[in-house]
Image (tube, rainbow, N blue to C red; front, top):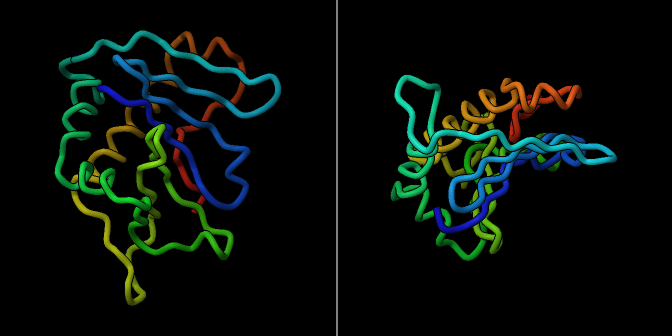
Length: 155
C-alpha cells in the first residue's frame, strides 16, 4: 500500500462517528470521536489465513479495476442512492489526495443513480470486517470507550 486512506461516515452527525485510517506500509488505525481523541492501532499480520480479513485482502481489493477506476476520477463518485441531503449517511473512503468514493446502503431507485460495482462493495465489506475485528482487540478495548465500525451508517 502506497497511499493513506480515511474510512468514515459522511452525512447526518458524521462528525460524531468513529474513523479508521489505512497508512503505509500496512497500518490500520481506529479513532473514536471526542476530546481527547483516542485511537488504537493493534498489530495486524499482513496476511492471515482463516481470519475475517487481512491486509492482503485489502491490498488486492485496492487493485481491483472498480476501485482503481473510482480513485482515478477527478471528483469522488457516489454509488447507490444519495440521501445525505435529507439526513442520510454514506460510507466514505478517501485517499489523502482527495480521491475516493462514497456509497449508501440504499439501492438505486432514481434516474442517474450509479449502482455500487462489485469491486467497490468487496472493498467496503472487507474494510468493515477488518475494523470490526480491530475494535475487538485487547488494545482497542483497553481504551474503555464505546467503539463502532468506521463507515457504518445508522440507516
